[in-house]
Image (tube, rainbow, N blue to C red; front, side, top):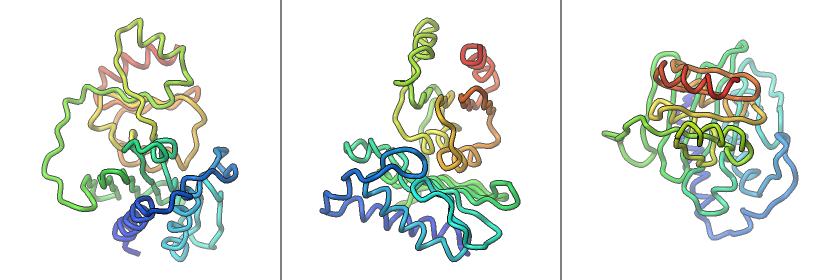
Length: 234
C-alpha cells in the first residue's frame, strides 16, 4: 500500500467533514474504547480511517478498540486528537496513525487538521510538510515547553512556577509529540495509551525520551532533558 498517500487522502476527507455545515458532528455520543466520551466527529473520522486502511491491516483505534482483520500489521489510530479543541474552534487538533509490525512501530503519520501540517516517518525518511502547499521554512527558537494535561497536574505546575519555567498546554498530545523537535521539551502526565503516543514518539524517536510514573518527557537537548528530569521524577 502507499501509506503516505492514503494518510493524506484520509486527512483531507476528515477536514472536509469538519468544515461541513452539519453541526451535529460535534454532538456527544457514548464512551469509546479509550475511556473518553466520544463526539460524532470522533466516530465519523474513525470510520474514514477504517474504510481506507482495513484492507491493509488490523485496526486498533481509540473509539472501537481492536479490529482483527487477520493481517500481519496493525494500524494504531487516534482519529481525532484534541476533540475539545475542535469543538471550540481552537486550531490545534489532528489525527495520528502508526504502523506496528512484529511488535515494533515502523511508520508514523501525524497531521494538524486545522493547518494541514503533517509529520511522516518510515525507516528511511522523515518528512515535515503540508497537505496543501510545500513548506520551505518553519521558524523555531526551540524555547517552547509544551505541557499536555497541565490542568490535572497542579503539583508539577507549582514546581515549574518555583523554577520560573514557562510552558503552554495546547491540548493535543500527538501533535505536541510530533513538534518535540521544534520545542525545548514536551511533557505529559496521565493515562498513557498507545493510540495517543505511538505515532508521535516514533516520529521523534531520536530525541531524549523518558517514560516513567505516567509521565512522558521528550527533549531535544540533553541539558534540558536532564534539568527537567530532576524536577519531574522526584
